[in-house]
Amino acid sequence: VEVVERALRAGATAAECLVREGRDFSVTVRLDEVETLKQAASKGLGVRALVGDRSASSYTSDFSSEGIGRLLRHALTMAGYTSEDPLNGLPEPEVLGQTAGDLKLYWEDVEALPVEQRIEVARRGERAARGADPRIRNSEGACFEAATGRRILANSRGFLGQYRRSYCSLSVVPIAVANGGMQRDYWYSASRSLAGLQDAEQVGRIAAGRALRRLGARKMETCRVPVVFDPLAAATLLGNLCEAVNGDAVYRGASFLAKLLGEPVASPHFTLVDDGTLPGGLGTSPFDDEGVATRRTVVIEQGLLRSFLLNTYTGRKLNLRTTGNAARGLAGNAGVGPGNFYLLPGPHSPQQLIGSVPRGFYVTELIGFGVNLVTGDYSRGAAGLWIENGELAYPVEEVTIAGNLREMLRGVEMIANDLEFRSAIASPTLKISEMTVAGR
Image (cartoon, rainbow, N blue to C red):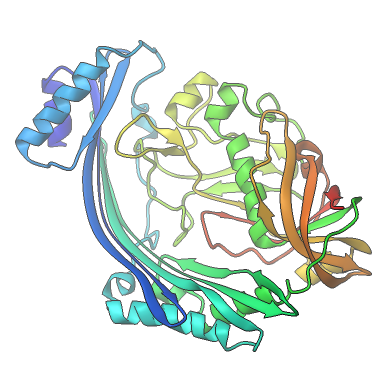
């Protein structure tokens, strides 16, 4: 608040200040030995100053009065060189606020776990993977990460809010070897609390099973077949959709969904939600990075495009209201980011989706970045398992799956009930009626 007041006294007509501090830890264990260990603490203060319709930002790690003075001078000087934009400015006072209640963002068990036990969690995960089968002969390692932090935001319209967050994760990457062939795969778990992590041994065993089932992988002849995306692969597809409904891409006309608000864009089975208020969610916060209270936004409802994800600026560009999705670092204007962005689960088990496919492809890994959000064209390298007569038959690699996001969304036939959050973007298993699988 003091920094905001100083900015106003120095000539700003409006200002906001973001303070961020945190502690980060990561350890990688390979073949039971510690390969890397990192521990760091950081803090920073960023200011966005507005002078009329011009704005600029700057940041510092010097919290002294002199350091903040220099910061404000830099921001105000730079504002004089920027272009005027009448849509610049802070959010309207009536949308500022915080989501009430305990969002379960901070857990002391993450910070309290000693370094030795953090290393042991990684060792347990890798040992479980290596001990799962004699064909697991090597490892790219296991990594345990932990982080805690605090964010404070204040602006000249009277908003002041803060919250603490914690995070931890465990990932394991084993290597399987058989008949002269090698395959790797991984599994991971992430949570706000240590108690919320999957058991280390379970993470290791799942990672080993995923690597083992890829042994003997082959290419396929090019064909058009149903494609089932496992939850990790489906989440990357949702990541593409998150970019397509981002207000920045929409107002620039750089999204295939830009002019389709209110129109059917997906199958009736498809309901896509962004919710920044889920307790314990990895994308949860009480307010966004402009001080707007987070909320639940239905993006696609039973196939109809209901909303984009917006901050204040993109909302004004589109003549819409912010959805509380402003995201920013210490410097720069706010962009747009998701809260917890997920596909509502369906009534089927993953096995029922696979069982419904007489001949098709079960995708477990996607490679590359062949997605054109302007046209919706989609083409990515893939690996997974071939489905024959409703059963997983053998592993497949070095193929490409291709289609167009417009047809893919409309072609979603079945959605499974296995939604689990391992990141802020999550999906259950889903089945698309037909795509091109390009191989030999």
